[in-house]
Amino acid sequence: MGAWLALTKKEFRLGFPVFITALILYAGMMVGAYFLGKQIDHEEALILMAFMFVMGVHILFLVFYLHYTLSSERKRLHLWLHTPMSIAGLLLSKLFTGIVFMAVTFVVTLSASSLFFNQNIDFFNEQTIYNIMGLSTAVVFNGAIWLAVTFIFFWSIFLTFSQQMNDFLSFILTFMLFLITGWVYGLITSMGFVETITTWGPIRVDDIIVGFEFGYMDNAFEANTLSEASIFYIGHFIRDLIVSIIMFFAACWMIDRKVEV
Amino acid sequence: MIKLTDVTKKYGTKRALEDVNLTLSKGKLIGLVGENGSGKSTTLKLIAGLNHPTCGDITVNGEKVTRKIASSVSYLSELDEYYRFFTVKDAIEFQASQFVDFDIEKAYEIMKFMKLEPQQKLKHLSKGNRSRVKIVLTLGRNAPVVLMDEPFSGLDPMVRNSIVKGLISFVDLDKQLVLITTHEIREVENILDEIVAIRDGYIIAHHNVDDIRKENKQSIVDWMTEIYA
Image (cartoon, rainbow over all chains, first blue to last red):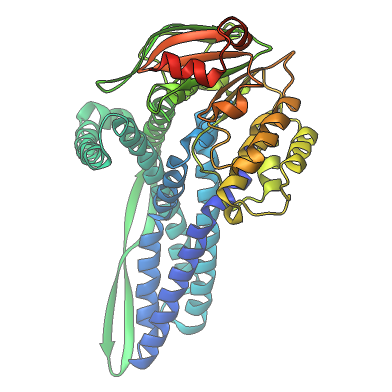
């Protein structure tokens, strides 16, 4: 455990530039939206749009983070791989630091935004604000971790291909494989048999905000939320979790057995 | 002990090693010499478990080599890449955290011998000093097998000799086997026990250094010049 913690400490230092860049970028967008909005007298609308944009981009944070840190390691595979630690340990350390950085960036953005919304926007009641924040958290983290594991899996395939051919060809082949796999996965999950065994454990969530309606009437900015009831299935979550675990260990196997220095 | 049995390594269609059979015993400092691209680095990477043989078997102390052999093999790469945000002290402490056989006191002793300061950032070090750090991190481990790929490249020729001589004092030849690849034959020949010559992926000679000196009445450089002619 001590070795893994020391490795994780190193990962924090290695990935720190991505964290700082994201913070500056998000703060820049929010502040930019505020000042631009102030100039045209629509700061609420622009801040809200900037917030939604930042949340959208934040789903990709882990992928960017992993891309940066794994690319750094690629230059020094002889160091990264020369360890008695399992590949799972190495990758989990990166995933963990990425999630921590993502959470901190997320909390900072969310806190600043919620402060602004509470003070300046009166068309959302407190419950709605918590609804938006809670749902953003669930959607962003669930999506980000799923994408991150998918990225690790295809990065390992890319690395395996790059042992035999140049990076450009490896990328093209990996990308094609990504598209084909996505298509096949879609086909499999929509098969009647798979649907039957995975569509269980429904959770009904009322008033989920699925969009916004912005308007400008009588010199005042107006915004309405579009909400509807949705049903989530625990079975789908478990299915995706199992696929993530399989992809993660397949990536570990490839790096361990197929990747060379 | 390191044992390579019928080892062949190909990168695509390019052959790096062909049918190599080699047995290296502990308690020896062995030089692996050859021209550029002859297969020296590949041999070391295969023993370190960082590359996989196309066919054949490699064992270290009877254990089949996989990436996990890192627990008993200390490997110094020829590449000049390390985590540049580390100070020398950070690098030593990180290495100590990753390998149970890392002797932190010994590492600081080697660091002093190498005239390195613990607070120096690796990104601010010269290439020569970064080479010294690599030596500190590799020899700081009490691993049964030490593999060093061009450890003296980048070192100032004026200090290279004293570092080579110092190196021997940080190796426990009762317990360790050291395999070094180098082009600086003249500097290392006095500390080597055995020499293995490789050409185009084939092992062409494996001799005791004293035998070459006594029986052939040649220096290693002269012997090499003769066999590579």
